[in-house]
Image (tube, rainbow over all chains, first blue to last red; front, side, top):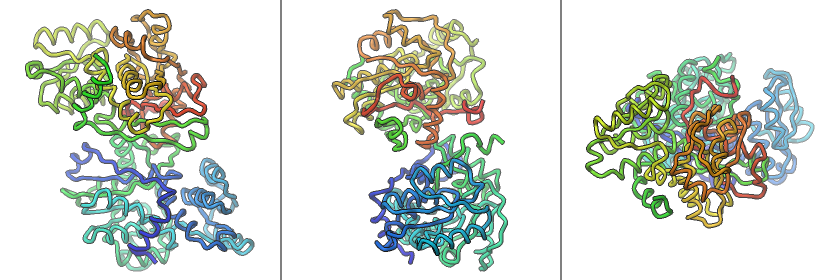
Length: 314
Length: 314
């Protein structure tokens, strides 16, 4: 279930363990756009990403019996590190299925939080088979990166805090990948502030979410082409159902505008954020959403970046 | 004059116009060092640097007659932009003497705040002659980048806020260039928290401050060799006098450790900060100051960086 009440309950559950992240603004950017933008900086969150919220809520929601058996997920990105961190918090075991070709820093982060890494071939079938094998052998509880209500409720807590800190927003935006964050954001924001509009920002090169919601049919065979490594997944059945009846729209951003948005954020807000944060601002820079005179909250999702490979330097 | 009371008066004067910048920490960094580090993030300050504090205090301290005539300074860096910003705040004219070879982004920032730019040849004699000419012709009030009590009092307000937010610090550190920030920091920190130790961090390639204070003779002919473009100046007579009797010491950092400190800050704190911020943490990483078990406040001075030229990518 995903409602304002369940998101509030998740917030009460995880609040002692997560950071209350700050909301930053830039006068120069606001003047340039003729709007007021409020950035909820989840790059400062535990493990460097909002994923800590959903993973923490899922782990703390386990029964004692489930907790005793441990958790498993598949992720080469922030969710894997977040689940490892959350499991350590509760003192339970976590196994993260990671493709063999995942970047070394990501593997190190997962291992640093004390999780077990299981390698698989870098494709969906191998990944699912590896997870199924772990569950069959050990009885682990799957904590899916997004298609899981416990996770979505946790992710929705970022928007709750944003609305508390900036009560009179007209629009709230988050990136769209698998839809866990956008689902939680939509229900939290519209519940806490009736009348607010919620939009997802998606890379034009990975627009399966946009097309799925436009056509009312969930696309499961898209081939994404984007630098936003956190947004290459398609919607799940649960996130698709929530978004098709609740979100106000998906706006797209080209790779060039995603990179421009990232650079703008670094230069004007003085923060390090990931490519996957940037489709919402990218879409605004591109002119795909009219924000003139509006107060717009944007969730910046994470700050785990390879500083040797910045996208404007390729 | 530079005392706890004058710094508090400066804080009351400038508080409505500046940001109360956050203090960030990193659990990973603290575990690595066996210490607790608290970073006062002046990269989030107006104009992207602590320089806004001193310039604002100087401009707001002018008599109406001085204000009517306007202000002048020489700076190709953050102080020039800060004085331009502060002058606009009070609605008075500012002229910034800038070497012809200053980077274009710096010139644009100064111009964007509405100041007049006067070019000079890139050497000290030409710069001083140009400033003197402006003063003789127009009666402008000089607001020196550091050797000015109004400026030092403003810079000291960052340490005041840091001590308020983290009351039980053992050590406070700031970078050392001309000594304006370190002078203000020393008097503010030791006044607000008797017993606290204050250290300056200086690039080993620009260690004239270290040598001046060690030998009791102010060096004025040093030839600095460091990537820290904000720290290439020598001490002024006023800052030298304050530091020689008040600061607990200067610790040096090699260029390699300055760069390592910068990268560590970006990776772990997820913020964009300048090279000139980094000698204090660089000196700690180098083992030049024993911080084991200590609570250490570090002022990060600014975030104006050329994202096309990051020092670990050369």
